[in-house]
Length: 134
Image (cartoon, rainbow, N blue to C red; front, side, top):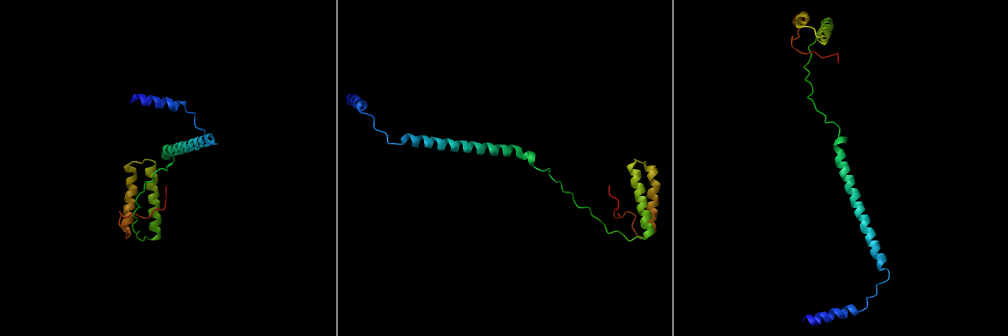
């Protein structure tokens, strides 16, 4: 059986090449260019996505840590003179803490504050609204 196969191979090699249709190479080259453009587009998109993914942690804003709103108790009504004196004592205490005063230096101010609040209807440990902001 190999003999007829060899003869067939010889006959086929003796045949002339088939004529190519007009414009075949132009179509082949056009298809190659389109395929190359598509590959470049995919590569460019991949690089852009990778860049955004790599730089996105740097562009995020710092996380906002939410703090609970301070609870403000209803302030007792104080007579105007007591209120002004209490605020003055609070400012003196704040200044003392700012300059790192000792407890012995601050104790007379605290005693005076407690005495002032004891004379009014307010409870001594009731927080008052703050007028000074640091």
